[in-house]
Length: 115
Length: 115
DNA sequence: ATAAAATGAAACCAATCGGTTTCGCAAATT
DNA sequence: AATTTGCGAAACCGATTGGTTTCATTTTAT
Image (cartoon, rainbow over all chains, first blue to last red; front, side, top):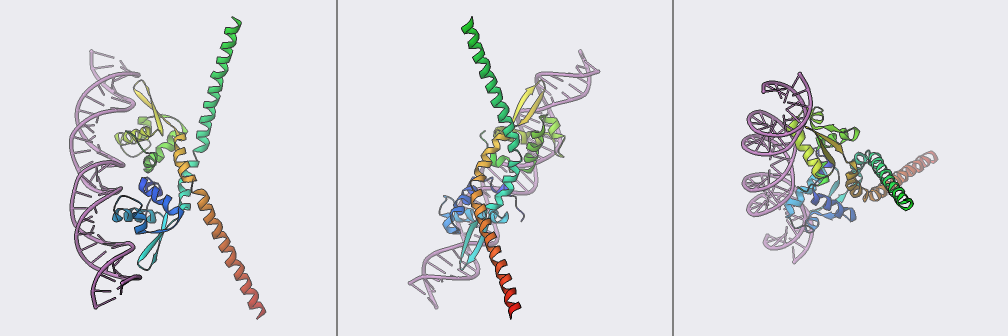
């Protein structure tokens, strides 16, 4: 099944799994041991992660070794980064606004001093 | 309700709404007019987007103006970027590998020429 | 050969999701 | 004053989600 990376990382458990596998590859039971849920549930999460390419699984005898493919996160990164300029602009104008009211306050104080 | 930004951007329609509102603020009907779904459906999407802070809505008479707050995407950016170093490393080692087999190929050709 | 370990697959469940239609209400137009 | 516009809320629907338990299969260890 074709899977969406955005949908895959929507679940907090799956994000944790990625964080876990980014450190070192683990077999499915080892991953499941890190969570309070059942092995079957983790196995389903891993299936979703492999279906969108965030994880690859290699069969080794009776074990299946799961490895993170974090470069697939570039799709997310690309989407988010198209808005970075936009949000920087907004923060810049906020800073200008704050600087402006700060300036006015100083001016007011000056006036009081004068008056 | 407390909402998760990751879950909010999981839906493609909601990502489109963000893209739309990043250009200029629109009222709810104007947003809905950009999609084939009903106004009620879009309204629900906007509710989710406001609940996680990706959109703010300002009442103006009978209209409600929706504005994107893309700086909230920083949460996504921060999570993804923690893996960038990791995936750059992997790509680097892939490049080294490709360079290596390329070198071997050239060596082989040299051998053939010699033999 | 038998037992244990690692896993997939299937059946099931309640909750959530993304969608709809309908109704009602307040603000703006006529 | 009557009508139109913009919208929320509610009820409903089928599909999907995240979880479970149980069972079968394959590999490895005893």
